[in-house]
Image (cartoon, rainbow, N blue to C red):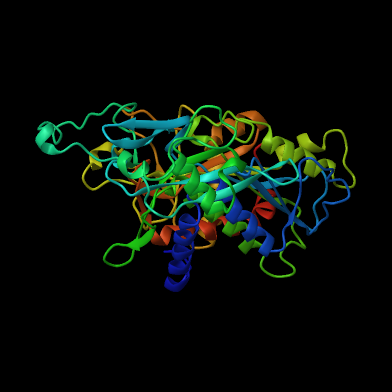
Amino acid sequence: MSSLSKAQLHRQAEHLVDFVNKSPSPFHAIDVCRKWLSGANFTELKEKQSWCGVIKPNGRYFFTRNGSSIVAFAVGGKFRPGNGTSIVAAHSDSPCLKLKPVSRKTGSGFLQVGVQLYGGGLWHTWFDRDLSVAGRVMVRDGAGGYSGRLVAIEEPIMRIPSLAIHMDRTANEAFKFNKETHLTPILATVSKALNGTDSTAGGDMEKPAHHAVLLERIAKQLDVSVNDISDFELCLYDTQKAAIGGLLNELIHASRLDNLNSSYCAIEGLINSLDGKQALEDDSHVRLVSLFDNEEVGSTSAYGANSALLESALRRIQASCDGVNLTSFEESIANSYMISSDVTHAVHPNYSEKHEENHRPELQKGPAIKINANQRYATTSVTSTILKDIAKRNGIPLQEFVVRNDSSCGSTIGPMLSAQLGLRTVDIGNPLLAMHSIREVCGADDVGMLVKLFEHFFSEFAALDAKINVD
């Protein structure tokens, strides 16, 4: 069992629940991380500005890109250009429904909202849920410029009702629906909306792109005029709060655990590893966390893992330090190691045959190392040995996951980043039930175990790596 006390494990579970409840969109999740890091004495950097002369040994820094990705790092007191970086990478996004650029729809006396599918969600779970919207709104300011504002409407303003069983007697045998026509949320009734002002869309749009009542509700939340709203990126989310559940409080029931679970653990582990004034003094590495957007749709964006985001950050860190030479970056990559952290499939008691019999991760038994012979995961014997050594010395249990040969295997940002940069990488994640459902389930104790694993990884990897002899 983990060396953490029951109180410590429960506290970490509570913190994850709070993080999820404050993060209905990737923009909100990154904003929470930004505030969290600032409170831990991290200095915010801007990619548009020079970092030369800014980054110092024992310093703590972070920057964001698009407001939906973040890189945070702490520089060891003994760091020199060419030394390695200890990395934990995860993603901030989750499968969801997003408003279309023209979302205004009506049907059979209802105002409806057109949505796009984002990622590979378990879409039938979105029926009959109390839904709302959250995301980023571009607002015109008084000086003729624009700024991004975060919005999250807490009230359940949308719903996708199921068809009554009386009208489809086959629903319990095979629930089938058209993703374009049947997965369209109801916003209001036409008769009620007509008592308001739902005749124009407001803003800069020449045609009524969105229902006025929706725009008015967003504007009210932001305390701005509808005419000041230029555009937005809004996703639907389940208004039911994340909660600790199970008879013995051993489970977490929540939305977006894929992958806010890993995002929380990564940032918390980094901050915890810096506890104490001398925490970085003897470290020769940089400790870094990178949370990417758009993993659920392939990571190919300017702020996804398939971009130059991480490489750019690593190059700039090297170039900003005294003593840099022409091959400092390449030397650093060879000395670095990355944990790619994304949730993994827990064995389901009702479908246990879906798991390979010797690789069945269970809730409450710690994070699982993910292995795949076809490189869908980046784990190797070398990278797993390093992680197992750190875990064993600190009393943190690990499990292993391998997909069945007759099942398809998902992937993570691990192989992508490992191939791009030449980074030694291990894929791990906390076990999860109902992955990509609107409500997922994870083990409460697993959260604290993963946080502790990351904390010790950041503190101990540099010394351990000196004992690894491969190339």
